[in-house]
Every structure is written in structure tokens, then in C-alpha cells.
Length: 329
Ligand SMILES: [Zn+2]
Image (tube, rainbow, N blue to C red; front, side, top):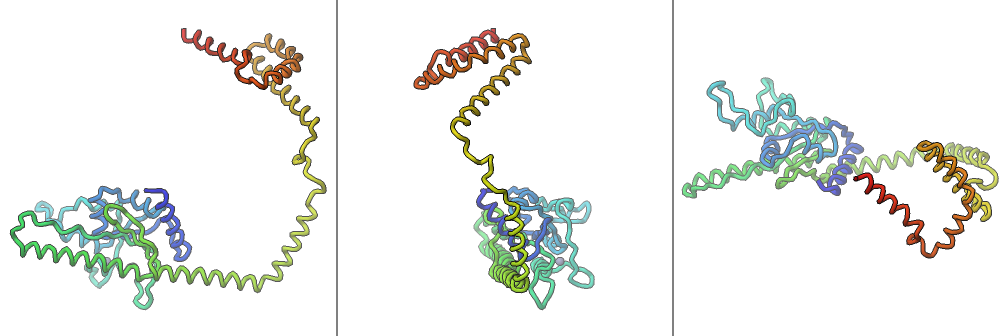
């Protein structure tokens, strides 16, 4: 997924969290069309949802969706049960969401089932369980290859259109419920739909009430707050050190030069220590050789024009090459 899109989705889910109280793991109601699309485009259910929601998903399948999936399956003569379709993940990945719409819990129409879960109350449209809807368009009706049976083909088209209309109705109805994020497989890409207008209106209402609450807080607490602030400022002022920070003051030129010399000396000592670890005898010589340091520095200054292509500078690298050549032998 492109970085731009994932950032957009993260921001969108953050808005759902702030305005509607969504929390990870996100409960995702997946429908039969979604599962078929995920399978046909060779997506991995959990990772794909994870990427789209930019968070941990908890996909759920309602009993009615399961019934819709199994309704079209051929019956296995051995078990007398319908074959489990390839696009239906095992319950370990996709657990059942129990739903009961009538006394004997007979499955109802999938779209009706999902909408009743997304907005359980009849008087107010509200997604109080914080469900995310994951859906897709039904597969395109198979094009008749024989081409001869026009009547049959027309019936197939009609069924296809009916399924498409139902899928569209589900999404339109879900958008009318404020606070329902919709994951949708659009031409082999899993997308998170932009916030619907009812959701945006509610979100903006939340923002406005927050703003108003903030104003009220300030109006009531303003005086005291300001007093506290003044005290704090005084405290801070008294803590302030007099005079400039000695560490931030620029050193005088002479002092700076000395410091640089000191640093060089230190470096030299370090080198001496390092060589001391290797050859203790030689270290002493090096330590003594720190005496003619000024001479070396002068030479450096003189050759500052042609620095780099001097003999002494080039020599060590040549030595190094020789050393490696020796080692390779
Ligand atoms: Zn149901």
C-alpha cells in the first residue's frame, strides 16, 4: 500500500476513534460478497484488513451471512451437508457473530441482518457496538459462452443486477448510519471509504461541542488559571540564573587556541594508550615523541595549500596497501 494512502486511512480511523469511540481490535462485520472478493483477488483476510484499517481487526461473520454463503453450495452426499466453499475462512480466523432476529433464530436476509446490527435501535440510527462493515460488489454474472440461450442469459443478468442492487443498498444504508466505517473491495483493491456525510456531521458536532466545552471551562476557571500562571511565571523567573550561561559563551581567541592544542594533546595521549595496549615499549617512545609536536603543526600550516597530495600524507595509505598485500600473501 502506498504510504500516502495508509496515512490517510490512519487519520480516518483516528477520527472514528475520537468522534465515535472506536477502539482496537476493530470489530469488522464481513459479508458474503466481501469474502468472495477477498478470495478471488487472492488477498489474505486479516493482513489486508490490518493494512486497510491501520490497526488490529477482529473480523466477524453473522449467522445470516453464513447462511447466505452456504445456501448456494452443493450438498455433499456423504455428510448431507453443503460443501464448505473455498472463500469461507475457518472459524479460527473468522468467528461467528451470533445474531437472533426471531424466536427460533432462523437466519434472515443478509443485508437486513447486517443493517440491524449496525443500527440496532429503531428510533435512532446509531452504531453503538462500533462495527465496521466490510463489503464488496457481487461477482459479475458469468457471461454465457454458448450465446444461444438468450432467455437464460437474460435471467442471469437479472439475478446479477438484483445482487448488485442489494449490495449497493447495503452500502447506501450503512452510510446513512453515522459512524460506520466501510471497507470495500473496489476492483481488486481494498479501500476504506471516506466518511459519509451523516458521520461527518456528527463528527463536526462533536468537535464543536468540545470547542464549546473548552470555552466554558476557560470562562469559569479563567480567573484562577490566570492567577496560577502568574505565580508560576514568578517562580520560573526567580529560578533563572543571573548572567549568561558560561557554557554558551564564545571563548576568547587565545583561550580557544589553547583548548584546541589541549584537545590535540589529548588525542595524542589516546593514541599512545591505544598503541600501549598493543606494544607497551613503543608507547613510551610515542609518549616522548609528543614533544616535537609544534614542529609537526608548523609543517601542516605550511602545506595547507597543497594538503592531501603531500608525500607524508600519502605515505601511510601506501603502507596500508603494502600491509594488506603482505597479508594476502
Ligand atoms: Zn443475522
